[in-house]
Amino acid sequence: MSLQNKITQAYARIKSHIIKTPLIYSPQLSEKTNANVYFKLENLQHTSSFKVRGAFNKLLSLSAAERDNGVAVASSGNHGAAVAYALKQLDAKGLLFLPENTSNVKIQAIKSYGAEPRFHGKNCGDTESFARHYAEKNKLAYISPYNDIDVVAGQGTMAVELEQQLKNIDAVFVSVGGGGMISGVGAYLKSISPKTKIIGCLPENSPVMAESIKAGYIVEMPAKLTLSDGTAGGIEKGAITFKFCQQYVDNFVLVTEDEIKQSMRAFIESEHQLLEGAAGVAFAAFLKTKNEWLNRDIVIVVCGANINLVDLRSVLNNY
Image 1: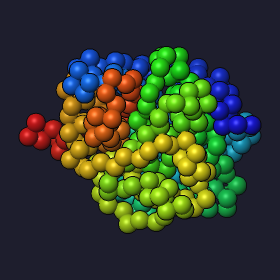
Image 2: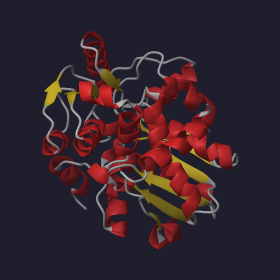
Image 3: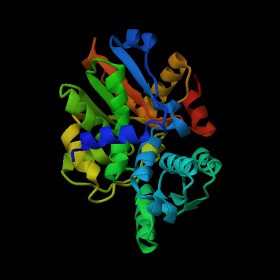
């Protein structure tokens, strides 16, 4: 079965569990950039992140016996919160493994859904490897943040909504970490509108997928601090998202930490909503390339709003 068909099935499976998030037109930012700018507001999704789409689709794809047996999860925060929320809604159980440097706001979110996080490793790659081996050893279903076809299909369901919300889309800007969201969104939109450009957006401090596509294989890179903690870290060897990104992503744009902050300030000022660093990356990538999109219909995915107060202060400093 094609990924596009899996996404269609996923939407039918999860739509009663998720919010059909708004797609809003921004008059102010459209005028400033001479483009028609739309924001897909996944920051208004359950757990303030798109991740619940993949979490619900994966959990609902398991048998009742598998869910009752429990699952293991690796996450930099948003995926863990999403799975914790979905587990609570489905009355199921699981273990959540996080890197030791996970944002406190994301840790508290996970706890608020009744889960108790466990910590292992300094980066996402180490955490994922540990959680996967733990799951295999203890015969638990493992839920990857991105390296799972059911998770990818779940994330792609936002594109089903985009098809319903906007007739013409010239380009979609999507933040990229492990590549689950852009793989699903790209696969579905390319199946219905091959002309739509899929733009992968990454911080210069953690451009692993972009550098991997350039090299032709998944590379390892030293981790640097970035405001976009939701996209930071390595990618599992053999991840299915690598080939999907090769197939569906038209271009990658890298942005600096200052560009991320500037874009976040611009969004907060114009739309009066919170967004996290990973969401700022997508908007920053559009602003960096705005002259390429004059008079075009542009969608920017605002993937989440889980930002801690320290980072928010740094964004708004001297504003």
